[in-house]
Image (tube, rainbow, N blue to C red; front, side, top):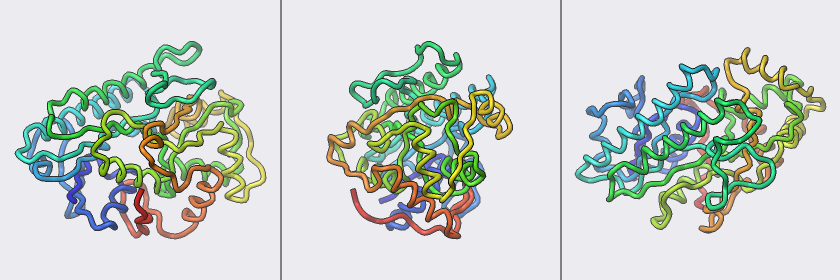
Length: 332
């Protein structure tokens, strides 16, 4: 099949590009800075010649959006909102104008749409949408608004001939340099991989192989549309996640960090503490109900696999698709 990946040069795009290309599919990447033969330039805001690749393709997987790994200034938050909403809107315009529209449009979204909570897990049917929690920074609500507007832009696109799925993805764990797992592993290796602010907050995650398999599963299942949680069935508390990661890496000690220390560290890394402190307890209700099975449902074994792969000289820097081995071709 022919797959178009708008915004496909980041960590998640590299994961999908490698796997889908290795499986024999034709993959075209839309990017602001094309470098390779099968990359096409676009601005993520306006229709241009790039829209021709949408017409006649089988699948669009839109991953475009400003990285959340930044300081959450007012300007950066606006850029996050605009880049996501505008790219989803313009992809919808291209799909609507196509003489032969794709049969499915998978739109990246985020598990951040759910509330910061500890009491129960969020699935698609019973999960609580965030934005009104007490005792959390006000700007966390803006992150939820970004997610809601992101999904709304896809849902409102007039594309009756194309099935639409919003991928409410948890953190995609891959050994690629610059990704979230790489950051966590580096902290563990330096002895800084202890609990942050007590470590009671939940972390939702998905192994990169299961992320790809879930995407393939959703492409094949014509009966599934709307929001779908892409997360392992085993979210766990931050302190448990880091303990298992340290064990997988063979690190005995992980120094804990207070909230203030986390804020200082995030500032130094030009990031934000929401990524560490928000409790994301998300489970894949619709995937499991549809019969999807996870290859890596448990974090300790997933972490061991990722650590092993990270030690091998094959993980490309973020945004590059260098000499990395493809993921398993096992089908969902």
